[in-house]
Image 1 (cartoon, rainbow, N blue to C red):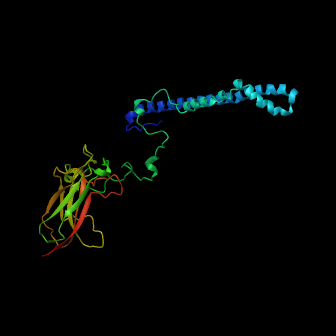
Image 2 (tube, rainbow, N blue to C red; image 1 turned 60 degrees about the vertical axis):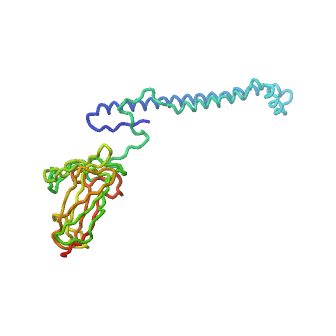
Image 3 (cartoon, rainbow, N blue to C red; image 1 turned 180 degrees about the vertical axis):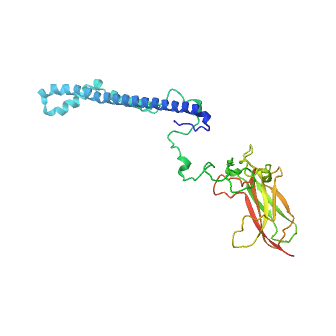
Length: 319
């Protein structure tokens, strides 16, 4: 019923203080009402406990008259007295407190405050729900670049750096972007053009900040009004020197291209990418992966969802 709103900025300190004061006042008001109700219930119970003894004396008065007549059959007179005093005793009215109790039970729950919370305190979590601990109770190393020893990233392809750009918006699971290479050759000749067909879903290919001019990791993730990821996708092919060990990361790939064709949406569509050929023989690894406006792979709602990427291997031969 009570809670304190989580305010986003320091500018809302006054509103937060007002909200907290209102919540405290409301809590005290409800606690006071609960105490009053408890005291009232105790008083009513005490009265009910006093009423039966008040009814007992009338049955005791006739036994006082009966002992001179017949003290042993003391049981008979009480039996006769209830019928003789049925109207005064009226045990049914004695049972009337039961219906009186029901309203008292109904009065207990509505210990609601008379003064409502201010607007800034509306639509907040229930007070009974415990507030999550800092960082969800996890041992987080860092969430910003305040304590880093590295230089801040400036949008260019330099490293090591600390990127201060926030991750931004993530779509809901049924709108997370996906990607699939739908057509690729298994074997091509050296320096011979070939095609890759790539299908994307939930990726609006309208956002690309050129890394060469300082747009790398510069913009956070942004969704469309329909909740779809804005960005593009990349295609790259590199030659592998081994099939047993992970390749070195720094060599420039034999082919690289970004696709930002102002198309794409919730329905899957397919883009054909022309590759002019690969300059050496061996095993080529050709990959395609989605990127947001600043080239990062789009985030997914759940940790067990595959990101929007795919990869194939192609044999490059002399003939």
